[in-house]
Length: 239
Image 1 (cartoon, helix red, strand yellow):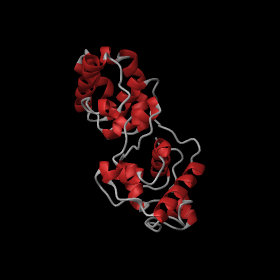
Image 2: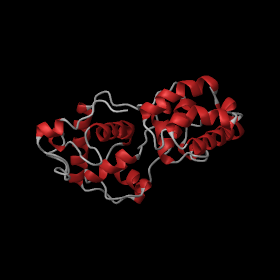
Image 3: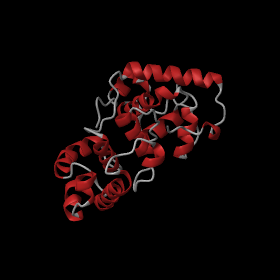
């Protein structure tokens, strides 16, 4: 069972734990339907979609994957894919040559090392080409029900704004934020924070005046605080 190395993170302050958990409860109320926004039917499809989502949007990936999965429905099929054909299918997601190479190498590793099936442990997943802890945690949390924290760009930006961590290294962020919450909450926590990053707490102009976390967030004021101005920045939903 994959775990975060809590020894890598200092023991969190009790007040910080309480504030962080209250913020997550508020986010849960704000986004009761928060979930992974990549479309998938099984662990292999989610793994492929997550690799394709790098430097792309979930909405764009979801437009591409139905055709990809119809042509290459499993690891065995994708392992023998013609690179030129796969490149053409995934081209709209960007960086298509690198992604095609990663998908084919990942699929070959699944066939050679795991009988064509996606493994359900962190240690095994990160042995696959193109798969790091972020991708592994997405697959574990959403395809296998194994709690994990997904440190994507939204998550990392927000947890620093929230004052939950000052770390920039993704593994350190994962460890320090994980220490603030019960393990069972990690996957849903990731969804809550990522949804907030996509909808309100934007990188350049966060909608501070339309944010229910305003009274708890140490970064309140980085964006417009006027409710009418901030409301125009809210994106519901964003792919």
